Structure formats: C-alpha cells, structure tokens
Length: 326
Ligand code: SAM
Ligand code: SF4
Image (cartoon, rainbow, N blue to C red; front, side, top):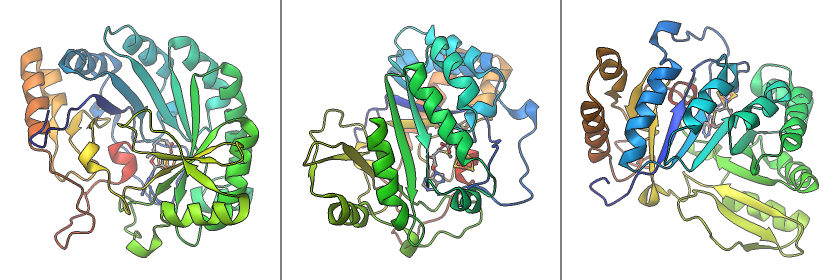
C-alpha cells in the first residue's frame, strides 16, 4: 500500500522493448536502439520477481512491451507464471500482428485474456500510423484469438485528434459485429518523438459525442470492476458496449493499483515516473527475496498522488511507451 492508501494488486510486466511495427505515438520512425539481449530479464528472473510480489498481494499480471509476441518462446513464460499460486489473472496486450500463429499456443499455456490494439480499419492509414504494412495480419490475428477461445478479448484504439474521429464509427461497428468491446485510450505524452500536445488528445467525451450522433444513445454500464481504468457505456438499443480510458481528461490516478517492471528489470511506480528501482541488480546478485520485497515496498511508498500531466512542473519521462511497457 502506498502513502495515499492505494493497494497495488496489478503488475504490468514488459518482456521486450522490441516491436515489429512503429506506431508514431509510441516509437521513433528510424534509428531505434533496442536493449542488448543481456540487459533483458530472462524468464527465470521474471518468474523469480513475480514469485516475490504475488505473496505481497499482486493478483493480476498483464504482459506487455514493446510487442510481447516478438519475445521468443513467450508461451513458455506464460506457463511458468501460470504455475504461481495466488496469481488470479494473466492477460496480455499485443498489436495482434503475430497472433495468427501464437493465439492458440498462448491460450494453451494458460493466458486468460487479451487486449489487441487496433487504431484503424483502413490499410493505408494503418501503414501511415505504424510505418509498416500489416492490417490484414492484425485482422487475421483477431480471428485466431477468437477461435482460440479467450475468456475476454478487448480491442483498443488510441484516441488522437485529427486522426481518430473518422475511425470511431467503423471501429465500433467492427467490434460489435464480432461481439467484442471497443475501447478508446486518450493519447498520452509518452511518444518517442515528443509530438504530443494537449490539443492532440481526442477526449472520451468527444468520442461519445460522435457515437451518440451516428449510432444512437449510450448509457453508462454498471461498474463491476472498480480497478479498471475504463469507463464503459452500453448502446441503449442493446447492440453492444464501448469503453473509454481517459487518463488525460479524467485522470484515474486516485484508484491506481499498478506497478510496473520494465524489460530490463526496473520497477516503476507510475507510467510517468522519472525514477526507477533496480530489481535486476538484486535478481542477478542473488539477493534475498526479502531484499527484493523491500525494494518493491520502497518504490510503492515513493509513489506520487498522480501523473500531473497538467501541472506547470510536469516533466515527461525520459523513456517512451515502448521502453516502459504500456
Ligand atoms: N505492442 C503492444 C500493443 O501495441 O498493444 C503492447 C505495448 S503498447 C506500448 C501498449 C498500449 O499502449 C497499446 O494499446 C498502445 O496503443 C498504447 N500506447 C502507446 N503509446 C501511447 C501513448 N503515447 N499514449 C497512450 N497510449 C499509448
Ligand atoms: Fe509497437 Fe505497441 Fe508501441 Fe505500436 S504501441 S510501436 S505496436 S509497442
């Protein structure tokens, strides 16, 4: 628990900073310098860390990156984590490019839930936004994920002004036709190229306006899981659900229950932290579990009340989203 009485039950675990596409809101177009292999935690080191934090109260893990599916043998890690008693929920966030081949092995290994990023259904726009081709591959990945039978699959789109407006209705119609929930995430100042500006955030409220205008009225859905940052709405005609994650226009830091471990084993108590705690050093020195636990406690104790994006004194973290693990 931190000094603002927030209990931390959720761990975001980045397994790589590498990625097979180059979304402009996350990575630079050219010249990315990825971490050398030796700096990335091994599966054994990751599992060791998780074995320490689960008895401390972490019950949910989300695997992320970079693109987690480019990490070799990922199903092996899923199976190793699945064996840990007390871990209730194991989820993963992916761009979907490699799900065609990996959805089934990941499900078999014990992965519970998937979030798949999908910003557009227009192939040319996909290529412009990600600087790579691949929309068809992502759509095939979504098919494979649905066939594999995950307990829950959500589709996530970034909400960026002058980019996302025209995608909103097609994306929601696509998700509804698949029986999936589409969620929109406000653009945060975590892009590698420093292009974020406040007026580039397309707010959840603005997207709701577009949906109500074009598809009909929305009513707030009953909130079953208060730790979820998404606020869900149902179409009044029963045709489906849509979610909004509004970290910029409606910060949810007061209910934050997350800690993060970067691919190279640094504990972060916030996406926007400007400091980190070096768990890898302890893991590699053969330190005791108690020492690792103490480092986690110190990191959480130092957590700030909120991200402060709108504060005069706000400092962008030095790392971009792909280097932290979104
Ligand atoms: N590669 C995977 C993917 O894209 O789903 C997982 C890692 S990605 C960093 C995790 C999530 O962060 C994605 O949903 C992505 O859209 C989101 N994201 C990336 N950059 C962001 C930014 N600047 N603001 C808000 N969300 C961002
Ligand atoms: Fe890769 Fe995900 Fe970042 Fe896009 S958002 S560049 S898919 S890590």
